[in-house]
Length: 367
Image (cartoon, rainbow, N blue to C red):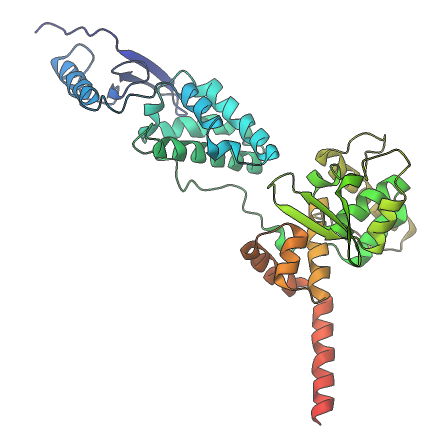
């Protein structure tokens, strides 16, 4: 029987993580798949032509919903959609990192290929470039899932299998907070500029990303004092922080003519990476001092700058602030604040003493 030759077929070859080479054939570039190398019949066989005709017929019947094309085109459209443009500027930047990498790998492939379960192994292999960092690996997973979800909602694909993918980074740091003695150990070895970073993080509960963005423009008068009002870099949510005496000293001692409240040690804009590194350096110096002198507290190795948000939230909790007040101050949603505060309440050692004192007082009154 004569072999059947078809024109316009778009062929894509992929090397899977196992080393297997798999081939996919599409009715046209950007069109639906009608054959892959796992099927029993081969290109040129009559069944190959039948498969092509059946799928091509479906394309013509659905002509009112035109095919959307390549993955790179879908990514470009996603970036201009409300799903992307309404995200915070920092989030958009983070998404672009992974979307650009995804386009470099799959941009010339038809978006329809992601309707196939087999493509999961290719996505997994692509994500392995971040295998050294579980957080980055999981972020790539999140970005791809949300992109493909959008493609499904936009009718670019009928569905996909990159859903409910297990994450690697399972660390929950809600129960890790800095103790007062540990913060005091850092202050004892900090230079004045380092102390400003430490105060912003521990007193204001600022994230590493937000410490370096604050300026005098974010300082507002309130009926009884001042506050810092700004939008968080990561989420875009408003955060309103009361200016405590420590933060007031930080604001009021900012060098004349300097708009940024906290800078790097060289007077430049403070990046999140540099802020975190400075806290790590302080921790190392504090521990070295304690070891050399044989006295002083050892600052736990697992503590990070970001964990100071927990310390600040705990102080608000102990001060009797309501859930809504804590949520606004920390820039959290109410549901997230409730979950986090529940965990913090269980790990603050002073809470046990405070509860005991209240029990003793209540028993004396009763009797």
